[in-house]
Amino acid sequence: DIPIWKMATAGHFEGGDFVILEPGLVLVGYCGERSEKEGSE
Image (cartoon, rainbow, N blue to C red; front, side, top):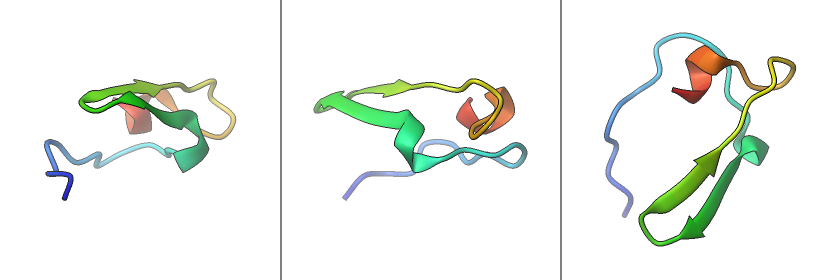
Protein backbone atom coordinates (compact mmCIF):
# COMPACT_ATOMS: atom_id res chain seq x y z
CA ASP A 1 0.00 0.00 0.00
CA ILE A 2 1.14 3.53 -0.78
CA PRO A 3 0.17 5.95 2.01
CA ILE A 4 -1.57 9.20 1.07
CA TRP A 5 0.73 12.01 2.21
CA LYS A 6 -1.10 15.08 0.92
CA MET A 7 -4.13 15.54 -1.27
CA ALA A 8 -4.50 18.04 -4.12
CA THR A 9 -7.56 20.20 -3.72
CA ALA A 10 -7.06 22.30 -6.88
CA GLY A 11 -5.70 21.84 -10.37
CA HIS A 12 -5.54 18.90 -12.74
CA PHE A 13 -3.02 16.04 -12.78
CA GLU A 14 -2.73 13.22 -15.32
CA GLY A 15 -1.19 9.89 -14.33
CA GLY A 16 1.06 9.80 -17.40
CA ASP A 17 3.03 12.70 -15.91
CA PHE A 18 3.96 10.59 -12.87
CA VAL A 19 6.92 8.17 -13.00
CA ILE A 20 8.22 5.90 -10.22
CA LEU A 21 12.03 5.98 -10.59
CA GLU A 22 12.72 3.66 -7.65
CA PRO A 23 11.00 2.80 -4.37
CA GLY A 24 10.46 6.07 -2.50
CA LEU A 25 11.48 8.31 -5.45
CA VAL A 26 9.07 9.67 -8.06
CA LEU A 27 9.25 12.20 -10.87
CA VAL A 28 6.27 14.49 -11.47
CA GLY A 29 6.05 16.71 -14.53
CA TYR A 30 3.62 19.33 -15.76
CA CYS A 31 3.43 21.66 -18.75
CA GLY A 32 0.02 23.26 -18.28
CA GLU A 33 -1.76 21.30 -21.02
CA ARG A 34 -2.57 17.95 -19.38
CA SER A 35 -1.27 18.56 -15.86
CA GLU A 36 -1.13 21.88 -14.05
CA LYS A 37 1.32 23.09 -11.42
CA GLU A 38 -1.41 23.21 -8.77
CA GLY A 39 -2.38 19.59 -9.37
CA SER A 40 1.23 18.42 -9.45
CA GLU A 41 2.25 19.94 -6.11
